[in-house]
Amino acid sequence: MDDTAIIEMHYLPSIAWFVQFSRFRVIHIDPTDRYKRQTYRNRCMIRGANKVENLIVPVISRNMQLTTDVFIDYRQKWVNNHRRAISSAYGKAPFYEYFSDDFLKVYDERYEKLTDLNSAIVSQSLKILGIKTPLHTAIDLSNPAPGMMDLRNTIDPKNKSVLYKLYNPIPYFQVFGDLFEENLSIIDLLFCEGPAASGIIKKSVPALDNFDK
Picture (spheres, helix red, strand yellow):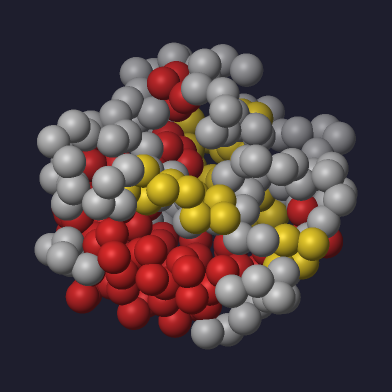
């Protein structure tokens, strides 16, 4: 296991995002992160009956403003849409009834800011997975500590050139389709595999020294 890494917060993060908790002793979240459209900061991918679906949290933002200043747009009925999509995709998954309430209740809080929603979901996910790797907020990025790996903007839906240096896809049972869809939201893995999810994450760690940034 390496020392520390820094990364940005995602919405219902992908499996690759959580794999980093098995690679590093400490994970830091970048407080100076700049919001970028069409990234995982406000979207995730789940597997529906007919295709992989994007769930997008609508936000009120300017591109490249601080992500911590991005507000969620509740004028759009995205909460009901996300709840319905998750239920439709995973209602028949083996472990849906065990974990669905833990995730769906987060939406009841109606967090104003995107980072607060994402943090709540990540905390819930780490608890279910039994991952105890510390998650901190970095303070001074002008002089990163020795051994800190910079993973910011490396897990991106439009750029997979670095993904396989961070993540070794391990197939597991999925509700729909015959072909395995890799690196979906963590809820896909949790609802489908339950207690086995943490073991699959550990197996998904790529070979050592496979990533150098």
